[in-house]
Picture (cartoon, helix red, strand yellow):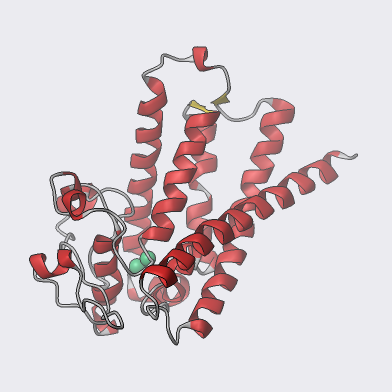
Length: 269
Ligand SMILES: [Zn+2]
Ligand SMILES: [Zn+2]
């Protein structure tokens, strides 16, 4: 097999893994949503088809560089990914996971704010906000330009910061789970966490929902650190009325969230 064929197979295999992971995780939470809140996604089938289409395109944009690096790692020892736990102190395992998430959070916050500038919003980010309201399938529903800004993060990090292969799996798992659950239209985590001291710093669906309602706020993906530092944190959002259910999330009721889609003109940062 030529080098080029091996690289191509690795890139296609990684695209398939990212795509199947998306279908499995988004599918599982969409199924859970339909069981817990039947009718929450009623009438959204055309939007869901678009979300799945953009997400599978994003899978290729994430999969190609990741597959290239996976090939280089196996064949030439590229990347700082290690498999022997003894290579670095044990404390580095959780520290590396936290550092990777913090660095991704920082990159995401600032590129996300940049994509809310009117010109770049039209070019790169309108696709993501075309989900009104987003569903569990919107996790990777990005225009290719936005997907590219996300696709560079993990490759750059694994080339520069040592991480155990297992810890990297944890990072990817958190990224996937938060991407899906932050968009699924209801709060998965207990009120104790969301409204408690941890929720003041951690982002869950209630926080990102407000970004999709008001646009010019709540840009972060995992931590509220940058939003709070930069004055763009507007607290928790509310959820659409549920058929036969509560019209507003408990979190929103207590934080004074008012729900509903807002004027697109407020999208600029
Ligand atoms: Zn979003
Ligand atoms: Zn946005």
